[in-house]
Image (cartoon, rainbow, N blue to C red; front, side):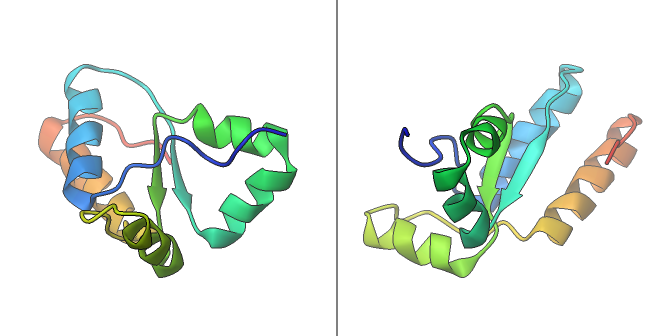
Length: 102
């Protein structure tokens, strides 16, 4: 079994900017909003880990992930709360005149 998730974005503003860039370029991706439970499940399930690591964006939605990140030297890590991210995606989509598919 290989190691844990490798593609987690760290900062709320970074996540929003990446999504806005996709919309501007008409690129389609999916986003995983992840908590500790999901990270632990990825340790046991290679298919689930592949789904997360193949996402356009995987963001930390849980303070334990933020705390571990900070303990590991990631000073700019912050929680990306899923409902807030969804509202931001909808706001950007409305502003750009594009569809927001959930």
